[in-house]
Image (tube, rainbow, N blue to C red; front, side):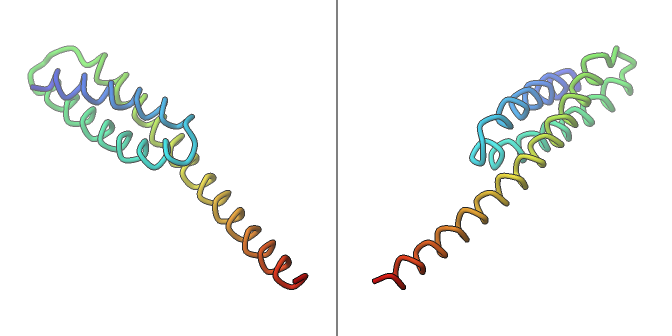
Length: 101
């Protein structure tokens, strides 16, 4: 059971890293994916240690999931700031246009 969770965590970590580079929508989807990958890799590592099996893949899944979580978190907040700035600029342009009329 631990091996399956480890592989799932590894795959979700890689998917999270890929989704980081797809902008705001990718980071919105990628953040929960990366966190679930992190949780699964931790659970898989614990199960593998209890069964005294090798934990190399679990360690790789853990590291990739941490990287994915950090990258998607940064992307999520920076894209959010960009969207808020763009919304602020849009409203000020709209009010300037309306004052010219």
